[in-house]
Length: 241
Ligand SMILES: O=C[C@H](O)COP(=O)(O)O
Image (cartoon, rainbow, N blue to C red):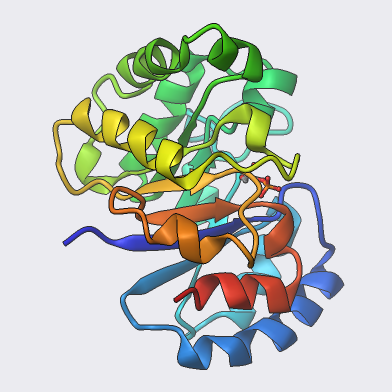
């Protein structure tokens, strides 16, 4: 039985005060969330400490949005795995397309970060996906296959979540057809050694399309950006039918 993981990625949104306000609205909605759904909030580094305290004893798992591959050192602006686990962080997003596009992340650094996360007992959420141009040229399969081959070298698939995020669907409202997302996720699964790796879909997931997405047999959850910022919409998403 594959685990279902619904994760919010807050990106560079919410101060500590705003994160506390979110929790006040969101926590009561979890009362009706089935116990077999893992609910994760991947928040900015500055929110992690206060969120860790607020969420102590709750069913929400905390996640970060990046981690460095070294345990410590002269790496200005970076955060290590040990710094995250000390705060009780369980998940970390690695290789998000925004990091690949704007911050020079490569498959090689993604691979190093994945291994460091696992060394510290964190569960990485590895993001893969193609651009619109690549899709239009019929390169979706080869791009993703290449990303997986490079990113997953010596990575333990037993402690891993993958998010299929077509770049053209992120923040655009242009959701990938659920059947197409299901097809690509099936292809991703066929390239893995471990059969029960949870594979999420991400890209314009909203409260009005989550039911259809989660009805697809290959899709084990969602990585949600914009719609995770508002307590009611993320509440509706984690409580999908
Ligand atoms: O990590 C989340 C994805 O980038 C999706 O963002 P979005 O739901 O705002 O399209």
